[in-house]
Image (cartoon, rainbow, N blue to C red):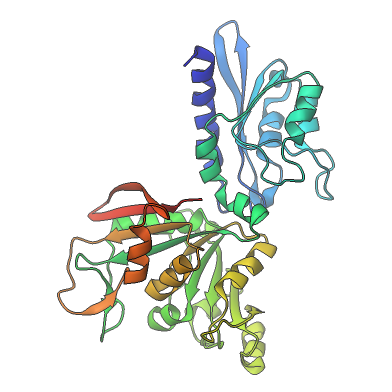
Amino acid sequence: MTDQSARDRAFMQQALDYGARGQGTTWPNPCVGAIVTRDTPDGLVIVARGHTQIGGRPHGEANALDRAGEAAVGGTLYVTLEPCSHRTIRAATPCVERTILAGVTRVVAAMADPNPLFRGLGFALLRTAGLKVTTGVLEAQAQRTHRGHVLRVTQGRPMVTFKVAQTADGFAGTASRGPIAVSCPAAGAWVHLQRAHHDAIMLGIGSVLADDPMLTVRLPGMANRSPVRVILDSALRLPLASRLVRTAREVPLWVIATEAAPVEQEARLVAAGVEVMRVSAGADGHLDLAEALRLLATRGITRVFSEGGPTIGEKLALAGLADEVIVSTSPQALGEPGVVAVRSALAGLLADPDLYRLAEAGAIGHDRFERYERIA
């Protein structure tokens, strides 16, 4: 590896790490990270960092270049995604033009735009303007970071991460006494952080009726990072007295039902501040998960964190819709028959090397966790 390629990888890693800070806040756009460097008499220095801002604008490279100002002239821009090359109503100046006007002489990008209409166009325009362009630096990592954006553009659905907690003997809850506290405090805090890094948190109505959850981010200083709360509720059984409905005007609450769900209950939920959407029913009478995810994508959602329970998790995986599966295991056993956390069909899929790979394993507090990635 040359000194230049080593530097490129190091700065791109910083851009990826910096961009990840904004995940969950930038939808419908990806959270792009960018770094501007420049040679000085004292050596190579970073003059600015930036990432896509809340709501998707300004983009990461524009944010970094604005911060750099005149210091960007003659420098290098590291960016985790190909700079946009097309004009939109919201942004009069594409990032390609802003990059050229900023005076940088080189652009290093991790990956190309996944949209086939614009893929490579930004790179071509930069080269035409005389800039040196290097692509594919830490591309595999960038593909994972921007997977939600890639899937929304190429498949019309968001990325889905399914998370389930289990006891040492494999149960998510008791058979008769309902849900139990499985995760240790450190693992629970980690789950709240994952919520903050996703655009939406998704739960099935069964889990809602059992737990009456809030589904907000309850970490110090991060209350404003609570994602959109999405409830899969085929028949609109969500109680008006639930904590979700009572807080619907404070944190967005979307309920997805089937076309056959009662109109009267929809009206009551809407009056309480809930947004109700409808999709078709599947062969089992429950809502069509694929259609529900496509609906979320049309609303700009790119990353979904599903804590929907064993049933939803297995259905997502069987439908090829669970892009990541996270299993956390407590050292404490339930000691009695209970609700199986990882059902047999899901366990079989996770064990299939052609479908999933174990991407990460470790410990959070007292709990062990494993993160599986679906093989694209």
